[in-house]
Image (cartoon, rainbow, N blue to C red; front, side):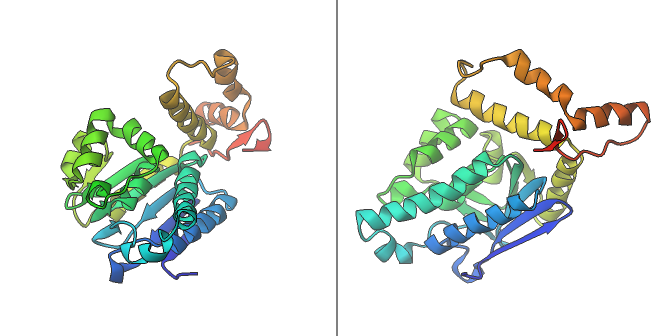
Length: 265
């Protein structure tokens, strides 16, 4: 345990915090592995959403270059490091709940790879984002590039990857990289508003929407869809749908549990 990864569950929301302020939240191989472990624990707690945050001034400033002497010392070591990053980011991307990145300060390199693996990105106005691999003589994994392209498009992705420039939160918003720009000092308040919205929505609907968006982004032809009508109407057999109808008739707010036909999701 590094002591730099903090996790908690509050009101059905899982929180992961990367806390290494003395190194500007530069992330190490061990921290990536610890993030994966903590994420698995949060998912086992049946959370409705996940929030990933850093410390004030730094979301993640990048990989810890000082450990490259051993994490990149051989093809085998480099592969182990690559797979650790890929495992966590893929788990975030494929999680059946919505994942929100709360960005304050720098989200650079590995920090941006992590951020684009999330579903929603909030950033304070003073934040700076970018991928500096071109300044280090390295590249990032194709899966990370695909996720970046899915968010900002090919032209913006190529710009970020080849220039290594850092962009403001406002520019990030205009290219679609950031979902919302938040005034400095108001990030926690806006995060609470977003996760409260998710808590009040049907978990199965959120999971279906996330899966559909990801799969359609990967293959817009819909060639992978076997029975679009059948999959779409399956929702009418769920406990959550029946609860929504009851609540409407009773003029109350529905209480969703994420049950599908009496079975937990």
